Image (tube, rainbow, N blue to C red; front, side, top):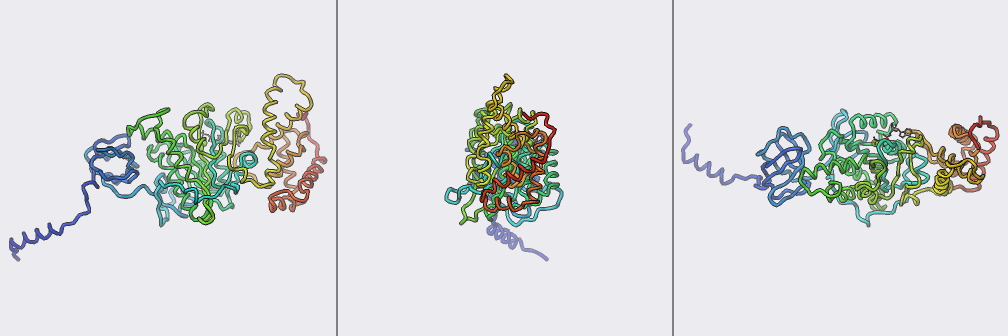
Length: 508
Ligand code: ATP
Ligand code: MG
């Protein structure tokens, strides 16, 4: 077969005429410099802030800096195959994570890929990790309790659904323990949980996953993990990925508890990334928008109004302080963003008072209305009594000849501190918390040796629930003490106490 040369040129001309392409010059750029997980790219004139870019070797990056003549991007994967002069493509999408019920019980990385070896995640929907928080009109006040199962918190620093309560303290003071106990306590309470681990050791995250699985808490929990060995950008986006996963459930009308462990390391990751992008360092070398970073994250926790489904996100961010310094930059920022804080003191922790909650400095700014009346009835004076105790405690160290009333206050303080002690992984039921605080408030424990208080309370609670299950059932049903139930319970315990003898070697 012969082909006429005229035909060939006509064919080529027609091809050229009909040639169509999607490639626009501004959709492809060239890498000017690369290193430390940061790429400076020339030519992506119309790139958007936060847009996903495709680098050679299928590595993704995220646009962070829009300069007049170049674009700064952070890499979300290894950069060793990428070099100067390589081309980079725009994707037109922002960073997204898979969302939905397929994530329940899974451990994922900061971009929602599974890292628990349980196979791919089933999902039909993704969400951008950055989103503007719901506005005022879409919300309703926080007035439903979110119980942690920790006596000291549920009584004195109550947390409500949709609240943001900071957990703050030095290293190794039991911060993570409180958050994990709060997650364990959501079992059978119809609350989904998201635990975001930022900048922690892989072994700690593995331990937490194991513990949650062991307690049956992974049935309603998702772990998002960006460990210390991962790139700063991944640590930076992990909490945003976590809250996007939570938001999907909130919009479906569910209640979600999210823990950010911890935002100090998150701030450090963001500082690293900002300095590498050559942004101006501010106080403590953090970039100027670090407050905005944390506030736009925490503002996404809220309680939606009933017309919008009534779902909620309760956030428990964690901050680590250095030698108790709460006036450092990041702690003050996050304190001012959140609706209250739980202060943990290393001296209390070291003296064996665990959880080491400093009741004088801890507050919940919205939680009061989220407490049931019965709890307010038994715990109303707790904070003041403990404050009195602390004040007198410092005096009592000077001499032993104290008057009777001082001794009584001191003794009562000791008893309360003992009652508020609680081992890890043993969240209490609300009725048991109320029962124990009622007995302590009624001063029935003043003559029992401190070491016997827990055994006695446990026995008393056990006997009461067997002999008169209707007492506490009625309190829980009415949410307050009615028909002198308070007296009935106290009399019951008093009678039980009369049958006991304690080897009394320390009571006053
Ligand atoms: P880090 O600063 O390393 O993150 P952290 O403040 O999160 O520490 P945890 O890891 O929660 O502290 O707890 C420190 C140690 O104290 C752990 O070994 C934990 O088991 C123990 N611990 C925490 N809470 C209690 C408690 N209520 N009773 C007994 N031990 C506790
Ligand atoms: Mg911790």
